[in-house]
Amino acid sequence: GGAIAQRMVIDYPEKAKALFLLSTSSRVAAAAEAGWLKRADEVEAENPALAAANRAVAKYNMDEEIKGIHVPTLIIVGDMQQEKSRAI
Image 1 (cartoon, rainbow, N blue to C red):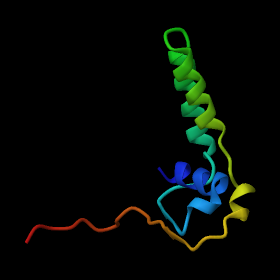
Image 2: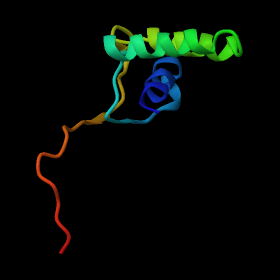
Image 3: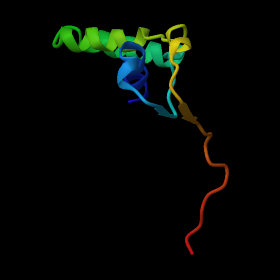
């Protein structure tokens, strides 16, 4: 969802008043890219359209384009919880 929201604000800035991003990125990391490309190869024979979509996801990178986003943007990220919660 975060990548789609960024893409929408980049392509249609006049339609956005603000942007909220939660645990997302403007590009795919190397490990995830390899996974998407592997998945594309696995489905290529039976579903070329899905394989093409997987390759597109593997290569998305909006690092330069997001510099043009000029609406108020809230970005929230976190790390894994270090302590386990206990039931009361």
